Image (cartoon, rainbow, N blue to C red; front, side, top):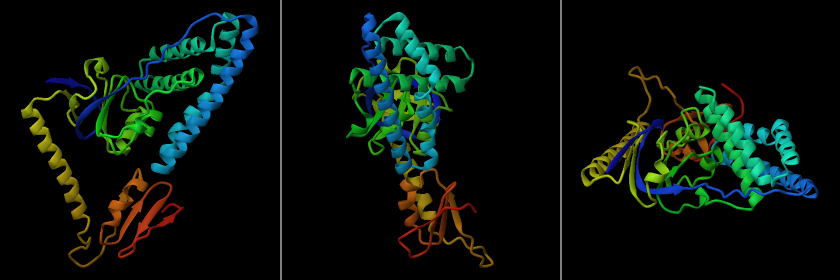
Length: 318
């Protein structure tokens, strides 16, 4: 058994097998002739267009599965793909150094990430992951190569990765990903925000964790204490199984309490309201309540009435 300490991104307990998410790409590096330069430029713009379309599709998925506010997380990615500074830098480097476009993109993206890393601010460090994600998608499209998608996971696992981009988190199979841990990332990263919205346990800042854990290894996330436990002994496993059962029981108890009429001692009825990040995923729980419940989101909110199986969506604020 080995215990690792990390940065808490989203609170909860998860017990499951490790799934190592490896995003490594082999980047070729070779010289090109003058007449090949414009062909490489053409390849670059095709890859940029494809990358932008992929982000637009991921954004639509986030809006459909979560909320419009969560979808806005990808606005910056879509804008950065069209960033003229980045495009000019890549094209200028390509024409001056006459190297294949993959190696140029790799170097320019790394250079930008290194510049941001010099700033002693966690916000800029988290943006490195966003820029890296754009570079990774560009390179995948240039190489016509796709990594294993987290959307294809078909068993309960804890994802372990060097880092997870917003597109990685958005695409993961929420039914089978119990939680995730990464080497890099912080509380202000998009992955952390999505993990909280999904109530998915997550820990960041576990140095070299990808190389220390093998796929299939039984692991535990205790993000209340910032712990990641690799190959727990029998006593520890039983302890956390008990904690997980208690956590589930608490959720059930909360749901039962929601069915108690919200009436004061003098007979005044008070409607129960809930602020929801992802109404599309939580509506079923609210429908199980018996009393009048108003469920509010910004800028939209949903109203549920007793003995009705439908909800009415309001598009104005309170």
